[in-house]
Length: 168
Image (cartoon, rainbow, N blue to C red; front, side, top):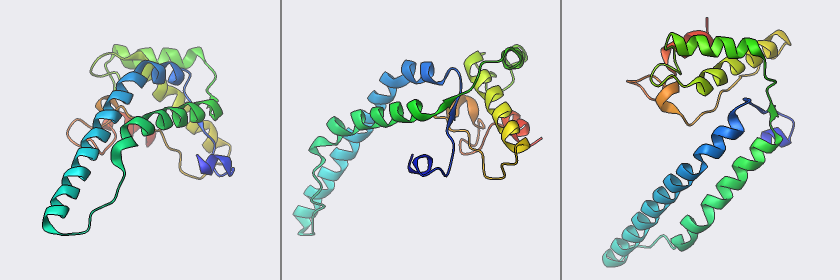
């Protein structure tokens, strides 16, 4: 976010990104709250153990994490979506995305997800245009959808079918 504000990078979002974020925000909020509650519980447990052992405690005020952090995260997501340029909708991208769905090519390999396929096609076009325009800096696709975009066995790696599109 600061890199964007400083003019270091450009944010571009897919034509379906805002709708996708809206559809999944409730689930993301629940997952974040659950994570923060487990984290709070762990810190409190560690502090109790430190107290019993006579060791220094963390002194962290965890009581407000699950109440204050989710709205801040939602606001940050909204701010990022608000400043990002939206990709223009082009029929050729829809056609390529539907071809991915028909042949079950990632990210539409598992559940025929056309929106995910469209996101990849838009990303590939934006990246190609940036490279043709002379950009040599890294181009990054951000997604929280590791199920469809990542390798089945190695979640830290891009799905091989998508990776081959990024580096032909």
